[in-house]
Length: 170
Length: 82
Image 1 (cartoon, rainbow over the protein chains, first blue to last red):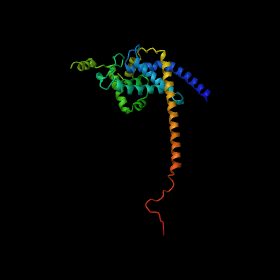
Image 2: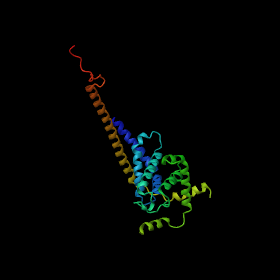
Image 3: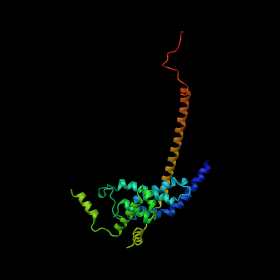
Image 4: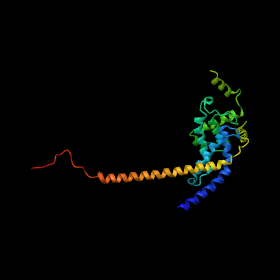
């Protein structure tokens, strides 16, 4: 029993190391896009990825043919959407941890970022994104379109600065 | 601008420079994963133990209380002396 478990641990460690070596770069890039941090200083994205990878490691023996990359990405997405609710706040400028808008997607809301990264950067099908986030498919489609439009044709005027000034002035 | 063109443009924006992967990420993930796995094992064992204890307690109670035996009647007074 002990020897079999040790062998299983060793096999898991080997497979997991190979998986991380192959997938960590792309997943970290996706996480950094989500958290809108600069590429060289991204503690929040690293933390997000570390926790997702740890979960994938813990579930490794039960994956049974399921793609570990899919599992890690799913963990990352659900963890980010849950964290976004608390950390970034639906209220924009009033959120406690206002991230410095550095990344290319800084103009978008956390949910728009998540949908855009899953749909276009990761290439996940619309139905799967909808199922993952618990939204209707049409809404995912519309939000993806809107986020694309916002990104390609940025609205004129620094909207976040105006919001910040309003919050500070009284 | 057609839809595929727009999507390609957004992909180009997102590609950018990939962040360097920190070397300690793998070790940290494994450390947390091992801890998660150990906690899960402990929780499963604890649950089985609880289930076992509950079963034993139920059997002991059933043997002592014998709930399947019809209780003696309490409404009719015992028929004595006739």
